[in-house]
Amino acid sequence: MNSVILRTVAPALVSLMVLFSIFVLLRGHNEPGGGFIGGLIAVAALSIYGIAFGVGAVRRALYFHPIVIAGSGLLLATVSGLVSAFFGVPFMTGLWVTPVILGTEIPLATVMSFDVGVYLVVVGAIGAVALSLEEEEDET
Image (cartoon, rainbow, N blue to C red; front, side, top):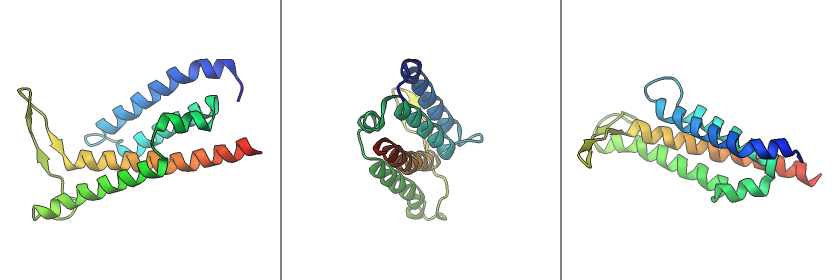
């Protein structure tokens, strides 16, 4: 699309949407939301960027191929579930650890790493589909 207004507004809009998707991802293990919805918001941002600047710009912005992103997310989500098996509790049981970093306790959980894995799977898989659909439109 060759719209000056869209190209002007797109970077700010995409930045806000990615920031909001990260907020939804981080909020999700305590309230509704999480990796899936956050990932969909991030893919919507990438789609807007692709409409404004083209598929090539989105591929350069992603740095990694979308399938690699999806595979990494699937690996992270699987490992998050398997960690509980090593501690003798049922599969996918949430485990917490609170390391002290710079004098502050920071609670970390396998639930959060699972959500991040789901986020990456959604961004990678749906992003790959969206990019291939947009590439087909560019060729015609």
